[in-house]
Image: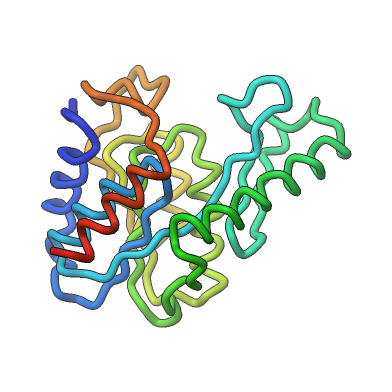
Length: 209
C-alpha cells in the first residue's frame, strides 16, 4: 500500500535511481501522475514536463473508457471495448477529448510545446495503470518522436498491462501488482481526484525549489 501519490512517487524515484543525473526526461501524465512525476524528477535530478493524454470515455459511463488519445493525435481504440459504440459517437468523443487536451496544454503547461524527446531516455509516470489506454498513446507518441529509450514507471499495474508494456516500451517499472487487481485506487490509503489548481501548485513549487 502507498499512503498517497507523494509516497508512491518517492518509492518510484528510489526504484529508478540508475537514471539519476542521466539527462532523462520525466513525462508525467496529468492529472493523477503529476505529483509522482515531481517526486521522481526531484529524486533523479531530471527535467520534468507533462504529456497530455485523455481517455475516450463511454457516452453514458465516463468513468470507463474504450481507448485514448494523446496530444499529437495518436489514438488507441480497444476494439473489443468499442464494439458497441457507434462510429459517429467515437468521432464525437475524439473531438471532445482533443479540445480538452488543448485546454490542458494551455492551462497546465502554459501553452508550451513538449521538450525535445528525440534521442532522449523518457520516463513515463502515472499513478497506476488500469486498462492502459492512456499509457498506450503516451508510448506511441514517444516512439513517433524517436525517443532513445522509453521507460514506463508506475506504482501499480495488473499482470496483463505489465506484459503488454514490456513489449511496447524498453523497460517497465511496477512496484505492486496485486493478484486481485480491480482499480488503481485500491493500493492507495488516501485517494482522490486531482484538480488543475493542485497540478499548477505542484509545478510552481518545484520551479521555486
